[in-house]
Length: 170
Image 1: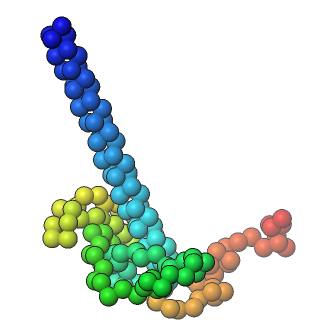
Image 2: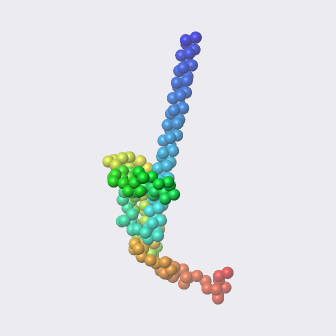
Image 3: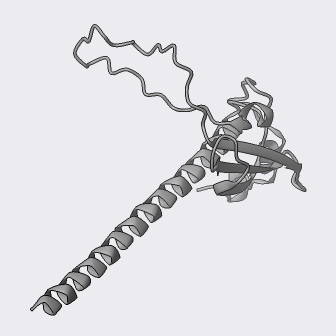
C-alpha cells in the first residue's frame, strides 16, 4: 500500500512539473511575441514619421521614450491624482531605434533602414529582440509643406501618362 502511494505521488509530481514547464514556456513565448510585435510597430512608426516628414533620420534615431498614458478626462475627480505631472524620473526604456540612409539608384528616393531593438538591460549591449525594415522613401526637410506641389517623380509621371485626347483615360 505504501509503495502504491509513493508511485502515485511520484507520477503526480512529475505531471505537475511537466505542466508547470509547459506553462512557463507558453508565457515566455507570449513575451517574445509581444516584444517582436512592438519591434515591428516601432520600426513601422518611425518609417511612417519619415515618410510624412515629421522627423529626420537624426531626430528619430536613439532611445525610445517610455510611454505614459494621458489622464482620462471622463474619470471621476481624484484629489490625490497628479494630473499627468510626476517628479519621478521615468524608467529608462530598453528600446532603441536606429535609422540609416543610403542613396538609391532611383531619383528622389532614399533607401532607409530602420532597426528597432530591445536590450536585455539598461547596462547591457545584448539585444533580446530586433526588427529591421528596409524601404525606399522620399525624404523631405523637416517641417516642409509640400502638399499639392508636384515633385520631379510626379511631373515625370504626368508627362508620361496618356492624354484623354489620344484615347487614354476612361
